[in-house]
Image (tube, rainbow, N blue to C red):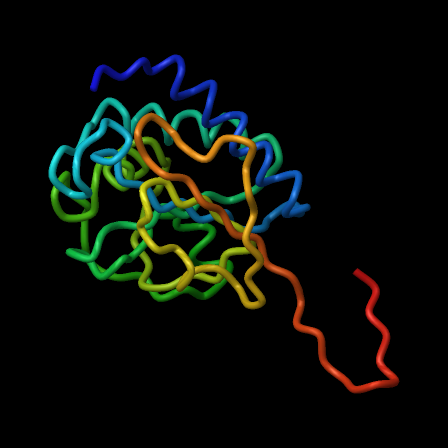
Length: 183
């Protein structure tokens, strides 16, 4: 499959804006990305990673999220236990446990590598509690999104050849018959 990086950027912008609208994130919130560039280019997850596609995806997300002061955490693959790349300042502000690993193309994936290269002071953390996230290629981001998770259906359900899903979170409803909820 031939990939048009401009189309990837355009489609990802639309998808991300759909998720941001649904999630109603605030300054400082964390947005998690799980992405298989192999799936984006039409391959099988983990078998056709594209450094160029990964760099385009991370660059596009940072262009959207940075002006909003929303922090991007990029999930790696199972070969690094789905640890996430984020800026050190974010990890330290949230007291996330920093782990010792540097992502590689086939141990972390192209988006993790791109984030590690594009961040000013990148670290890997074992877990995060994101407020919303985007899953490109069915990489399973749910473990990193705060409860209660609510599916978001972006207007586009594919990026390149990859299936796209998204999550946002909302506070838990607690109480009984007398409780009211302001959402």
